Structures are given as C-alpha cells and as structure tokens.
Length: 250
Image (tube, rainbow, N blue to C red):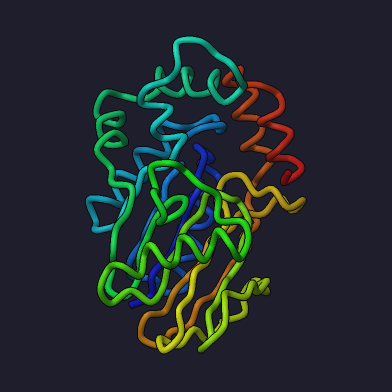
C-alpha cells in the first residue's frame, strides 16, 4: 500500500487539488488527511466537499485545532485566527461542521500512528518541533501495540526523526522527491508539512508518501497556483496577512 499523507490543508483548494493529482500519479492507493482541513484559506466549503468525498472512498480524516475552532469559534476575536474561524464557520454547511466535530484526533493504520499534533495528549495541540517533543510524541504512540511509525502535521515543516538502538531521536531534513528507507526495526516520527500553508519561504505545497510494503518514506513539494489561492483569500475579505503568507510561503 502506498499511503498519501496530507496535513494542514487550510482551506487552500488549489494546493489540495495539486497534491491529490500528484499523489494519484505516484500510484497512491490510500489517503490520510491529518487535520487543519480549514482555517486561513478562502475555500473552506469546496475543500470540505473534497475531503468528505475522500472519506467516503476510505480515506482516514483527522481533526486539527483549526477544525475545532471553526466548529466552535470564540465569541470575541482576540487574534486573526479567531476572525477567520468565525468566517469559516459561516461558510460551512451543518453537515460539514458535523463532519469536523466528529472526526477523531488520532488513528492507527497498520504500523502507523496518525495524529495532527503530538500523540502525547493530542487534544492539547502540542508542537513536534525538536527531538524532545518528537520523543514525547513517539513514546506516547508506542503504547499502542505494533506501532513503529508516527505521522503528524501542525508545524508546517517537513522533518523526519529516527531512533537507533541505544540512542535518542535524531532529526533528519529530507530532500523532496527522494525516497528514504525507513525499516521497521527502528522507530520513526515525521512531520509531513503543510499542503495549504507552507512557512519555509517556498510557496509550494507539502505532503508525503509512505510505501508500507517497501518501508520507504518520500517527502514531496508540489507547485500550485499560489497566487490564485491568495486571490481567493482576498475575495473572501479575510485578513491580508493570510494572502501574503501564501504568496511568500511564510
């Protein structure tokens, strides 16, 4: 099985469509969407239509912090994300909001543990951003029998952490498009980056493919019409900062 791992779509329809097309060309036969399906972007309803269609076809779909915020936005807007959450809530149908509300925080798929943020108390939305936080997430996931791999998003960056015998976790920065051997006798945790809002200065979408048969993990960067995605944000009347992030990849 070739599993396409997508996270942090952030209502970016153009980026999602580009990644799905890329994954299908890569012969992926299963999809896992690891949360933050909405928030920030200008096309939440259209993105949710595609997500729910994928779920009907067998995709694993998890809930992220922005999804929870869109279901129950705060009454007062203390920050720009709150303003976007209220707008997103109004754009979604009751069926789409119910889908987000009932989506799980975690899932297991064979030897893989899937989560939006950290497997260590996933409802607290902790960031896996260094060896220490990655270790906490991995150790929590390993309490589930048979788990050797942990995949998450939330941090909008692509990093692989691996554990050898007798050593702590070590971070590895992947090269896009290059398959990385990830044999099951070791333990691995990866943040797969953001489909809809990359933040490393490159306005190209991120996702990853895990080949369960070969135990290969490949991180990808996919060009998409990020200017059209930014224009959608502006048409929606959302904060200009959200559009500039897409244009600059920051």
